[in-house]
Length: 102
Image (cartoon, rainbow, N blue to C red; front, top):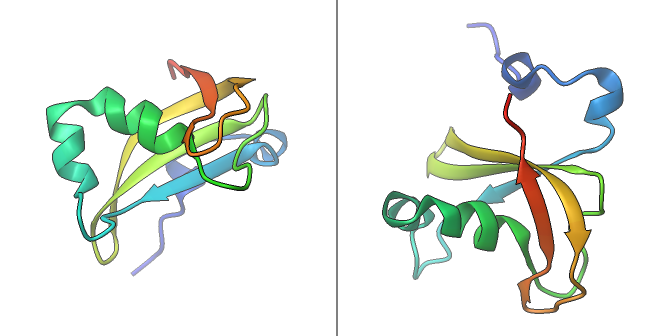
């Protein structure tokens, strides 16, 4: 079986790929992100994607890709956003971004 790479679907240029980061969201044992997504997609697409603990995950200008784990090797793409602002927040939503229409 031939492999399908994520960028085969997304179609970023080589230059754009240098600025893409993927956030792999999965259950933490208490909360299933898919259940959250079904109830309120924006909670996953903002809070789960842009949450910051101690270290920075994104920088302004990067493209943030949000994936939710459905099973062992199955993931759901929920949004792709360009990071537009960093809020200097720890243990909270630290970034703002705009969804890419394409």
